[in-house]
Length: 245
Length: 299
Image 1 (tube, each protein chain N blue to C red):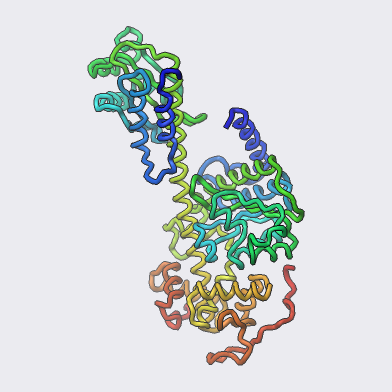
Image 2 (cartoon, each protein chain N blue to C red; image 1 turned 120 degrees about the vertical axis):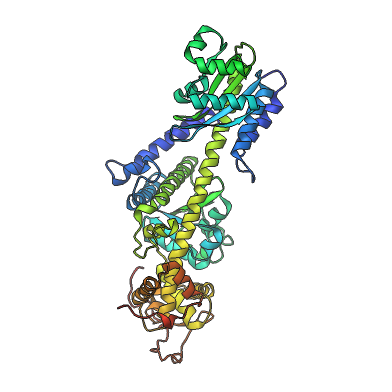
């Protein structure tokens, strides 16, 4: 990388992978990816398509509205270099969409792309090991062969964005797990405490106390944890808990 | 990270994963994907992570403690869901009693806590440290179970002899903590299938998870509830009294809890046992016995 774009490249990498920042937003990050591709690489437009994990595709970001429409079209007809790329997990490109080869392979995509003013498409996979999560599409208004340096940097940016996305997903999932864990521990603790409160205010043992709580909860259609909390916080009179039938 | 480091990590993970999966073990399928394994299989998987930690990291005991937040964990909402032996359980109990220790520090900081000679740094954990030494522990290592900044618990290791972890041992311990985290993510996700609740609570994801929690501190929470009712204080204060009694008498907190539940011990004021006649509810008098635990159960 000798053409002076290094500082920008470093900034871009940081932006793509710094998922721990407070206001990280996946769509913002992918929009940045497509815009930076135009600035850093010799390309005219860029877009990102993501998989939904069930085989479906959706357009996540694009550097221009024209690009977005072309990507949406490719997803709708389920054809084009970007679609082939995301299905195969390998780079797919057409240096000239008006050449016979491309026209035969993706006739509808090629004609839509040329209508939108694009002549060349390079699609780079967004993948980590076996998991392909999307595709970064680079577009040119003229027939174009992407130089090796640009292919490498484009793929590196796609890889960084992939890592950022997967990490963000993992963190979000872990947050859900943490909340569930906290909820589970809390409700378990509060039920034990409620057994103790009932036992402490009576002559019952903990198991009998639990029986009283459960019977009362069933009789009054209460969730056991809600009743337990009310008992622990003394908003329910323990004396009102009658023995079961 | 160099490519060589990356390859080394991958090999390490592969080796440890093979040990944890074992041959033909029931939980071998548990790593297959989220929500695919049942809770008991995944709990036993965490147990095997601990066993592998003992053999590979060369420690004398290992355990996994979970909590949803530091405050909740200090306040008693925590559970030790795997442990290789009695001493590992005892260390968890001591941390609950004193409200400090390596597990809480690792959870708080999100970094490994590596104490190769706890007797040499008595100021680190004023309450917990001396008790751990008295229990025969010389070195403690706690590793957070986390994804990014989200923490779920810790992998806790101890040794009866002093000395730091070698670089290799630390790398193994970190890799095992990662495997434990993955298992925990599976375990929690599989909670719906593990629901044991019979009170119609099953729709609530959190409630359905309670079924697989071993709930090792259940009797302490029952005891806190009893103290709360009898002393007219809230449960948080009551738990503090139970902990204070255990700490000031150097009595295992579960022994204290069992005696409270059996109404052999009444904590009515600031953790002080009631020596006199029973309170007005006419309950059987039960002055605290200073003698050692008559049941003589777990040493």
